[in-house]
Length: 240
Ligand code: FPP
Image (cartoon, rainbow, N blue to C red; front, side):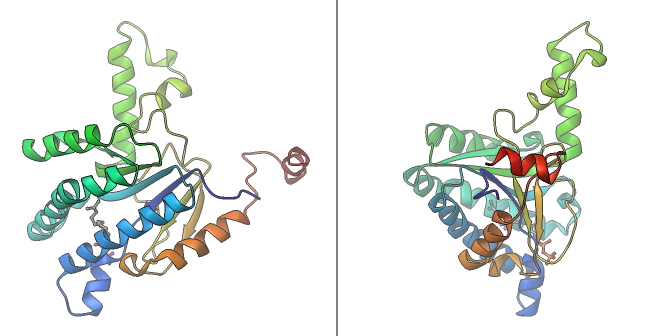
C-alpha cells in the first residue's frame, strides 16, 4: 500500500470537449480548466502532497489554431499575474518547466517574477509544464551535461547525471499520473521521470475533475503495490 503520492503529475485533458458539449468556444473550456486547477492545487496541499506537476502547454500545442494558442497564452499570463499573490499566501512555490525561449520576452519576465516571488514557499511545489516535451527535456539535459563537461564523451554520463540536468532536477519523480479526458497516453509528458509512476486514466473531462474525483484517484493509488522491479513477496517483506 502506498498512501498518498509525494509527487502527483496531471495531464488536464478534455477542456475543448467540455466546451463543445455546451456549444461554447474551446477557450471557455480552458478558462473553466484553469479555475478548476486552483481548487485541485488547494486540495493537494490539504492532502500534504508536496509536488504537483501539470501539463499546461506541450511543444505540440503550437499547432492548434492561432486564436486558441493566443487564448491559452492569455490565460497563462492571467494565472501568473492574478494568482501569484494568492499562491504566495497559500504557501505555493511555483515553477515553470519547458523551453521558455519561444515565449514573448514580457511573458518570460512574468515567469521569472512569479518564480522568485514564490521561491521561499514550502507547502506545495506547483510546477507548470509550458512549451514542454519529455523528449526535449531529455535531449536538453544531455546537451547541458555535455556543455558542463567539455572534452568528456557522452558515454561518461550516468543516469544520475542526466536526471540532475532535467528540468525537474531536485524533485522526486512522480508517483502517480492522472490523465483526464478519456485518452490513455502520456503525450510526451515527463517521459524519463515517470519510469515507475502509476498511471490513472479517467473519462472525466478536466473542467469536471473536482475534489471528489481527485479523492477517487488517490484511493485507487493507495491500493497499488509499488514493486519497482521487485517481487510481491520482497515488497511485502519490506513493509513488515
Ligand atoms: C487539453 O484539453 C488542455 C490543454 C491543452 C490546456 C490545459 C490548460 C488549462 C487547464 C488552463 C491553463 C492552465 C494554466 C496554468 C493557466 P484539450 O483542449 O486538448 O481538450 P480536448 O481534448 O477536449 O479538445
